[in-house]
Amino acid sequence: MEILTVHEVAQLLKCTPQTIWASTTCRTDPSFALTSFIFRLRSDVVSFEVSGQVEGKTVRFEILSAGKTRQEVLRLRRPPHLFLNLRPYLVSEGLEAGKSFRVPVVLPSTLSQADAVLTVEGEEAIRIGSETRQAFRIEVSYAGMEATSWYDHQGRVLKEVTPMGLTMIRESAGQARRGMKKGDEAVDVTSSTMVPVNKTLHAPADLRYLRVLLEGIDPAGFEIEGARQHLQGATLEVVREALTSLPATTVPVSDSALAAYLEATPFLQSDDERIQELVRQIVGQEQDGVEVARRLMEWVYQNLEKRPTVSLPSALEVLDERAGDCNEHAALMAALARAAGLPARIVVGVVYAGSGFFYHAWNEVWLGRWISIDPVMAQFPADVTHLKFIDGGFEEQMRMAQVIGRLSIEILEYR
Image 1 (cartoon, one colour):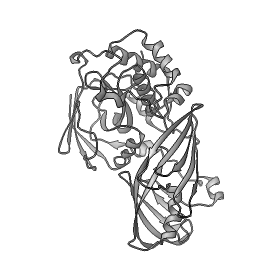
Image 2: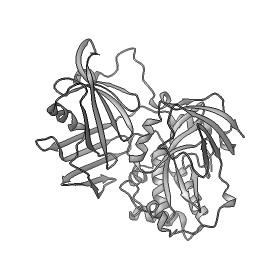
Image 3: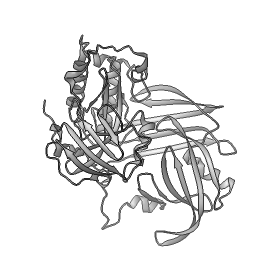
Image 4: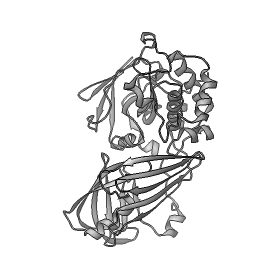
């Protein structure tokens, strides 16, 4: 099996131009509370749609992905909004300096809810193109992330700084269609969010130990501490797992404490017959957990084209397209493992590739304890430059916005 080199991984992690189309439409009641919505996303390798109907204190989702429809129900604390209809709601309530709002928001892309706190900091003049406009600056906090928006008196967003630090400015349709002006340079988002380091690691896949200093973030609220990672203050130690010391694990694993990591989800459709049939082809009659994990990882590595992708990774979509980046590899790997009866989860963090650390997603599988596995790099276990910050579904992975652009890493020791 041919393994990707560090240089090839670095190239994979760099973005390539691609067309993305997204739209959200919604209906509200007279108080601008949400009653229904449709969210659609199209890119080179994904076609995803989710509609929602609010019924009292529930949202009934219908998810269309890979030609299959799935229903989910989300319980609510109180009537929700979308970010799309927050603007008219705030205007109806009155934009005044010092005024603060706490509003429940449904996030269609993650099928989750969060309270958004919006604070009107004041009115100020901002530059939009060749014009100077008066706008209310509003600080927004939701799901642990922060953004800043500037609204005009009609509630239109003139400018917005996203949680990842990207700035969006309101333009006319003609300006938007013309795209970049002559002389403008394209921005590689992935490269621009790379975490530079003080040392070069020439053979990271061979390392067994790494000690680094993490700065720029608050480790509280992240899943940094674990079996292979130990955090003391701001110093993180990572030790590569030894597969030889694992207890014997037989699949299917039957442990109620691990049931959540065997369940199908709207994006990890491990109960789908196509996923289950593929697992039977790959695994056969094998029941040893380590061998099952290895076979599944190798299949994903060998059968998915390594292609930078913008999507909401769905295991069935990935199986159809046979392409994607780390997110797509991790989604399909998790679904296959769960279908095989092997508890699995997606983890996200950063990995060293070429000249620094990049955002990355990989997996952990349960083999008597959680063991890291990377189907993009064909590493089992994953090398020690995989620094984990979060495990969980896409609603949890949004918290990486608190890391990207703020994290700095100093390499202290490696061997």
